Image 1 (cartoon, rainbow, N blue to C red):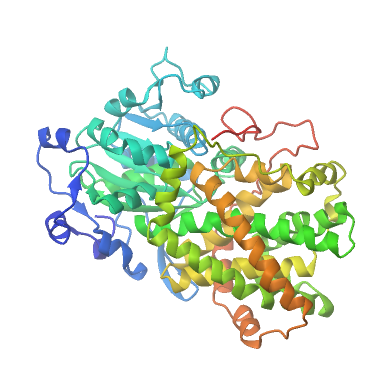
Image 2 (cartoon, rainbow, N blue to C red; image 1 turned 60 degrees about the vertical axis):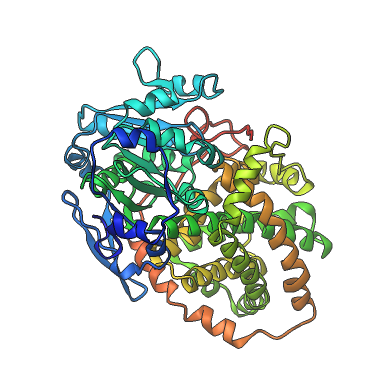
Length: 562
């Protein structure tokens, strides 16, 4: 059991859910009976993070004080690779299913890590027949001739660890077949808890004779790969990850999950539950990570041009300011440091924007979170996926401002990018209101800091800085891409309708909002997380250069499809 305080016998969990069904039941009935532990949906929803222990037989856990609360983590690093043979004992085949945002990164990182320590494990890619990704997987060394590339259900039947990274809507449609194809005693690995939300809404349970775990990198797939590559000379650099054990059928699920996370290059791995993970993840990408920042940029660009700025200056003072000095300051020194580095006039401008923007942003944050919590947002993603043959996702960078941005990047002088205090106030207000929403909904500081801050400034914003909004949004998962398109206009409109009108009407700064910002315990929590930050900043080629660093097969894409 990974989380002793949050796990109970299957019989008890199922007694409270008499109508639940076991997906993949036909094969499960043929397997040897097992007595796994499983976290019930009720326990997932009400988990006390203080009781989320990490009971590993292989890796050393570490307790850390984060924002005044004790949490447990496992540190990564290439020096931990020597522990992988023990953690992954009994696993001979890892099947990575899919080739979207996460799969190329996770498959290559896993393969490189086990090769480094000489492990007898084969990493295979499973794709549907006729997939357009077949050739790209071959170009990075997964081939039919070597038995490392094949039809997805064939790979699933062969695998001891199935890392399921196909699109969420496809998972929702295919999970009964996927579960039925798995070997008894194997492990199903997820990289966020979307599938659990789908099964919860349908009254289904996982097969009882397989482990069900999640390892969730807090960044888009290309950044998981890029930082792993950059970290090879400094004992590792990568993207932090959360992990959860939903069901432990073999007694080894915790170490399999942690071994997987270490192999991906996670600097540190923290404990969560699968439901709390998908709530924070799906909500976060609709907010400050993707949808929210897109909405901020569009609204500020229009505001600044209406105030008389040139198009180029409006882009610099909105997008460039966020992805440049604001993000870099938050990454190294925290959110409050953005405010503290301003002069008195800048601080006043910052707080004017912050005070006006905080509550309108939080209004949309709460709505979004509760749509995810109720699984309405999950159902919407599944329905959208089923419409893609008729209504594929359109381009999001065709508007004037993003075309202007290409010229701005071509002429960019990094040292001359302005830190606009009004822009900083709006951006920090959205970030802090997202943080406060997650805290009020019961999430631990590690999850909050990673889903609302670290993922934004260390993984996602550098991609928008390099090549624009589509390069950031559309290198993420289909679920994230859909959510960004849906919620960005909501943040855009509420900022224009409420926040900016309040500023223009010279409404006074709310002293409670100001005091709460300055004294928020998240600032201490971020300082702790910053102390565990790898010494490498992500590097990805700009469209203003001829470099292809971090771009291409197995890396970031420059063309996108539904």
